[in-house]
Image 1 (cartoon, helix red, strand yellow):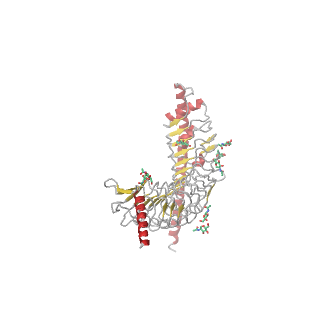
Image 2 (cartoon, helix red, strand yellow):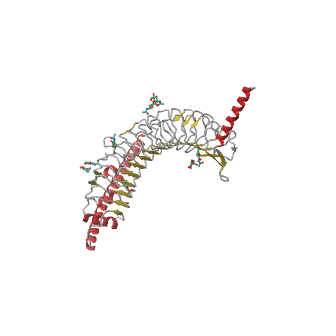
Image 3 (cartoon, helix red, strand yellow):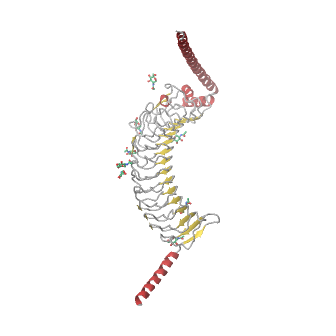
Length: 473
Ligand SMILES: *[C@@H]1O[C@H](CO)[C@@H](O)[C@H](O)[C@H]1NC(C)=O
Ligand SMILES: *[C@@H]1O[C@H](CO)[C@@H](O)[C@H](O)[C@H]1NC(C)=O
Ligand SMILES: *[C@@H]1O[C@H](CO)[C@@H](O)[C@H](O)[C@H]1NC(C)=O
Ligand SMILES: *[C@@H]1O[C@H](CO)[C@@H](O)[C@H](O)[C@H]1NC(C)=O
Ligand SMILES: *[C@@H]1O[C@H](CO)[C@@H](O)[C@H](O)[C@H]1NC(C)=O
Ligand SMILES: *[C@@H]1O[C@H](CO)[C@@H](O)[C@H](O)[C@H]1NC(C)=O
Ligand SMILES: *[C@@H]1O[C@H](CO)[C@@H](O)[C@H](O)[C@H]1NC(C)=O
Ligand SMILES: *[C@@H]1O[C@H](CO)[C@@H](O)[C@H](O)[C@H]1NC(C)=O
């Protein structure tokens, strides 16, 4: 009789203790009317097993505030009858998450685990949560992810893995199974190499890898990313860039700003398979020359940024293959020489050119107009153009080309009215000469075409004639 009583007493005390600890501030309440949100405060890992609050179909969101969920183990959110679609465990002091922690959340679509301190993340953590479409793990990981960890999440569209001080490596099985993933943010981590991790994410549209420690990009890294539209590799340490995308790729935005790209790495034709590219940023690297045909076949490129390199020469011929170009930024380089004469075509869509902060001494204003007929804005401040030429340039660009010019003229003596008139007359004359020359070239081209057409016609006629003569035989 004594032993059972003792047990009863013990369990009584234990129960008081449990109830007390459970009541130590843990409570859930329904948010504002129509919010469809249950707000739970001061939860510990065991709080959700038998909550006093009854979760029903109106609780689409569960938001944990001031929670201490240090160690999450299997079935912690297995709440009877729940229809939770959004689980927000942001800032909940989570340190370890074991397998099957989220089983029971069969309606879950968005899971927020941001701002935690997770150092142990087991492979089967997401077991039983197949409908999750968005997962937020920013500023959450103190250690790398295990292989196969996302295998269950076949519906996942968006994965945020940003700002994780512990994410310094990936393997080719880390993202295994994410066949529908469209958006992957891995910026601000400590990644040194991609190691085959993202190569097979064939539905990926946006990949953010900026602000890591990447050094080498290999041809296999993006091997099957045929749906990728945006790739951000800025603020890394890339010294080896061997970009390769599938033939039918649709990449439109490529950011390589602030890497360690040098002339040895950036070669002719290296972007030529990126025919859909619209924006290319190569600023803040260490380029000194632009190799010929570097931008070969980039028919759709609209915005090209090459600022903050050490480029010494501007040759228009390097940019002739870019019929859609609208904006060209070459500011903060060491350009001494500009050549607008060589090159085949003109760039009819360029409206903005930035040559500021270079070492340019003179600019061929006539050919500038000819190459960029619709120039709207040109920046030329902080160059070595002499004062008098600056005034002259400003006048020509404004009066004859309708171009807004940013150039320092404040300390330069003004041209008087007669000087202005003379300049405009002279340049207008030269422009007319060039226009006439261009027209005559056009006329020659047309004559050439006519001659070819006549020749083709004659050949056709001869063939036809001979055939007709032969038929009666
Ligand atoms: C947050 O939780 C701790 C213990 O988990 C508790 O002592 C504190 O009062 C809580 N703060 C608020 C604002 O509820
Ligand atoms: C998740 O909860 C945090 C507070 O912990 C809040 O700041 C954040 O906005 C919430 N996120 C969403 C998507 O509701
Ligand atoms: C590269 O991936 C392999 C296999 O996936 C892994 O074993 C290795 O640790 C990874 N290396 C680095 C440096 O990430
Ligand atoms: C993953 O990497 C390992 C070596 O790190 C390699 O043996 C294996 O073939 C790779 N698997 C795939 C699918 O690329
Ligand atoms: C990359 O460039 C940074 C500064 O631009 C420099 O400190 C670093 O040594 C370079 N790294 C390599 C590998 O060239
Ligand atoms: C060109 O790039 C520099 C940064 O390197 C930027 O400050 C400037 O605004 C850009 N120019 C234009 C016209 O966008
Ligand atoms: C740019 O190149 C010149 C030589 O062409 C060199 O003297 C200078 O130090 C370089 N500047 C930078 C920032 O690399
Ligand atoms: C321009 O082309 C001519 C011949 O077509 C060549 O001799 C000259 O070196 C070229 N100039 C530049 C700066 O490329």
